[in-house]
Length: 80
Image 1 (spheres, one colour):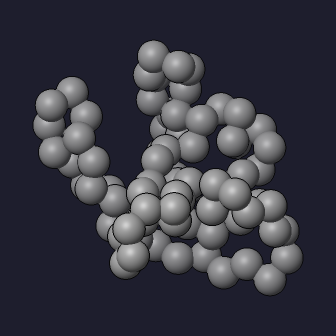
Image 2 (image 1 turned 90 degrees about the horizontal axis):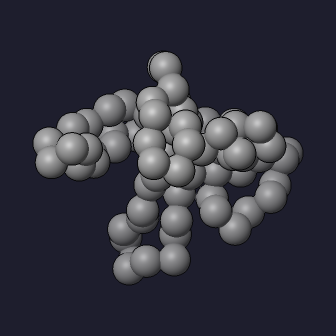
């Protein structure tokens, strides 16, 4: 996947970061930023926002539905 320009810098559309703080059975996903990529967050480090685990991680592909420029899109992304 290629990086895409956004207001706060670059996002990378391969792995995503997850937020499990929301409602039960629902999670929030966001694209990784340049900072996430440089740290290895979401690929070498657990993709949960508050987790820093590096060992024993599994990789999963999930369907990510998002709105961009007013248009509904979906992508098959990886989460670790």
